[in-house]
Length: 370
Image 1 (cartoon, rainbow, N blue to C red):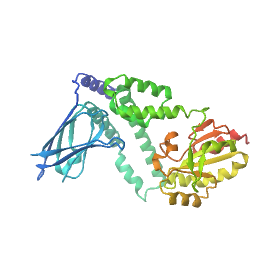
Image 2 (spheres, rainbow, N blue to C red):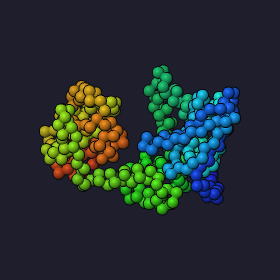
Image 3 (cartoon, rainbow, N blue to C red):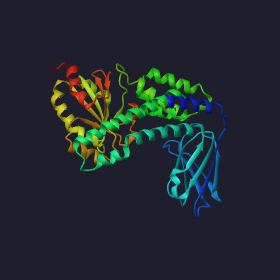
Image 4 (cartoon, rainbow, N blue to C red):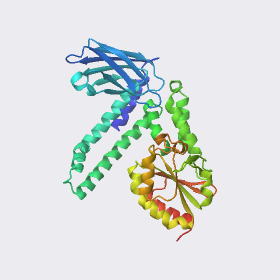
């Protein structure tokens, strides 16, 4: 309850703060031989990289600008090890750093940064309460018994449950914060499509989110997911097989009662560990109408072909060798592998993300095998 009241008080405080048209970052760095140098401000986006440079003069620096998409940024200074990470929105931020401990600089100001800092502190308190750092070291010790490792896992899971409660409180109290929006990018499938539509509508109603690319990312995800609901005809695509022949998905599923699109890669450890099991399941149920269409997220043709041969994968395999930029992976909202989706003989979607444990019972039920 105290923590909930704390967040409520923070919200009240921030609601009273004046809004800024842009950001101002003022920093001070202490230590020997740090009076001058180049200071760099960068974000972490692969698709919209943003950077700025200024000078460190007499141990001080200043950045001014405006961000359309507030998010995590970092400051580095030439000649000083480490970087300072913080959440940048259009606010006034003050940084106090020591060259010998640059990473642990004091960052104050910034509506979102202060909110995120408070949440991070609470997570650190939970980790300290359970002694997570020492438990993880103990878990990695070769002398630790299996029974003790199981106990450590149970303790860790309890700490995660408590941390998840903190997150839930944060998101409930800050439904339209910039940090909440960024987290929703990773949690799109944790909600129904209707729930996510409502959340995005709330963000789009606020002028400060105009042009925010994370809204666009979520809307693209929702468009993909709406096309992947059970009963929808699976989006068609064509990719080359190992011999360079174009193979269309729509030419594959009519051959089977049920077809599994298997998203995998030769470099993917979990995929390779699962392949022997998948081979056995395929041998067992192929005669009853079970087929597989392998879609690889490889980028190295040699590695891809070697994995197919080594793992004895006999079903059709295709790839555009574009790694995570695979056109099929984007079309099917594949954010991790191995992952699958099942289609009937007409190409209608039956189910997505069937786990290894569920796979055989699922096939037996669909194929009517007792």
